[in-house]
Image 1 (spheres, rainbow, N blue to C red):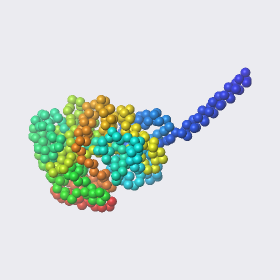
Image 2 (image 1 turned 90 degrees about the vertical axis):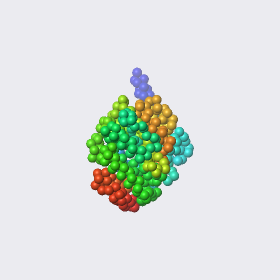
Image 3 (image 1 turned 90 degrees about the horizontal axis):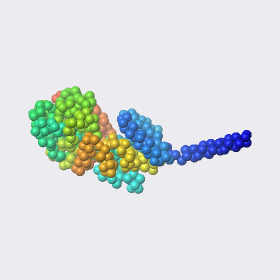
Length: 432
């Protein structure tokens, strides 16, 4: 009896040893890769689910992930970059992609695309171009969006005003706004401001210009008249009561459920297409809201709309396992099952195959957004290079406090404001 117990003990010990050795060997074969992104809790939950799906399909890969809100994310990334500890796969933003690439922090992705490791065959170049810097691809877009004017179709019908042409001008906008205001007795247009700095940059794109010169050391245009004309128009419309003054608009800055178009205070509203979900939801399913392309100056040579990547996935230049990183990005881009979970939360997917797979699952807002982006893609202007260093300084310390607000509050003439803007902006840019 004792001999049987002894043999059983030896057998169990051998099995346990083999299991330990097997586990150790398996652990040695598992590759650990870090992935990092920013976003809301909903994005975190969806992305984690896709990470786990990828791990299930690739048991040899263990993904360690980090996430944060937008501001904390960049503090974290800059700290990791300084310490040479960047994650293999990192979410990138259009505003920073060029700077990070030129500082040698990102790996070119062209070889992975050429080999098919990252398959972009179902993505038109207009969806890919935003990820290029100096002729090389450094980021794969995770979603596409564009600027839009939300139109309340019922308000237009009540006013007896036809919906504008897709290629409408700011002259058309002014005439329509005055008609809507006269007929409805409400504002034709609510907040946010039509003097937004991103409307200015879109205006330059439509004129065949770039907001900044190639090396980011100066503005990319010499004629300020389009800006003068635009702000003069806004002042006229404010004076007529057709659009809100900044002071009036501030009363509606408490969230999407209080947006002027949601509460019926205005018939039009400016918004990026990947930010309309909350507005459409707050307005309710019985409302008929449409996304419309941006107006353009009468002298425009192209559309004011361009397709902007909402964000990218990039591979850091220090990544020790770039092939696995590329495969993960490809999975994120092309897996139908993964994108059923992601549900276009980062913007309209760049792959036509994925867009088609998602269409049956979309609600009315999703269908409207997808349709709008498909329409814009047919005539969109090329996207301009990423904003140069100093852009945030220009926006926050020059455009808004020294030009936008004083002009629209009637404190200084438009011409004086534009002159001040150019002088201060180029002083900042000259340091690049």
